[in-house]
Length: 311
Image 1 (spheres, one colour):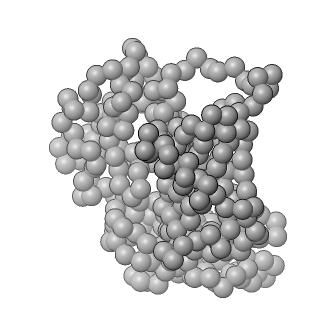
Image 2 (spheres, rainbow, N blue to C red):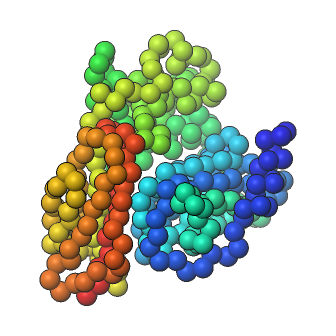
């Protein structure tokens, strides 16, 4: 009960006014609570998506059982927007206001979301909470690790994913047409890789995680080096830009954006990383900010930072 009172108090204290138009600014962490406007109850499994000014999805997360979400951004956002969405509720999307950043470059964003009228609702699919919850961690293009044996885990890039409830309270994960044991799956959670059966243990019918004897977090020495990646965009058209020079200051590395505007660096040590961009001929900087990315763990992470140019 105390936690719920805190949620409501927190909401009224920190709910921002309509955000003003923001340019690029640095954010460390975005967090907050999502509340059902019809009953003031906290909402679990609400999708929280963060977009750039030209509507490119940059970060995603979901709320927990207390309606709380948090996302380490650790970088620069350009005219960012945040969107809250949930089945049979009205989506809520608005711009983030840099004036609400605290001294540590954190921002609190809370929201009430409104259920749709009964005549506008889409019938629920016959899928259990266990399946829905599991599938939120397997997004196309993301990665997860599968513990193969003592001291070794495979990194798998997700193309397709499906959770299958083989019996009540028991599931397997099918990724890229291969079936995986949930007690050996590790999914990214704020810079580390956490055991999926541990995360889902309150929804499973048996103590699968406890019986497996597997660690909660995958040891760092089983992870591949972290990746700093992103794209270069024409801010006027939203099109990717090829031929931009991107430089990682220390250790010095250089990349050229490809035909899709993409670039990537591999790093294996924690620290603050600075990257700069030199536009190709015919383009100029859209802004003068120098992105800085804080990597708490040298291995296993994926950190995105995009650049923008104009003709």
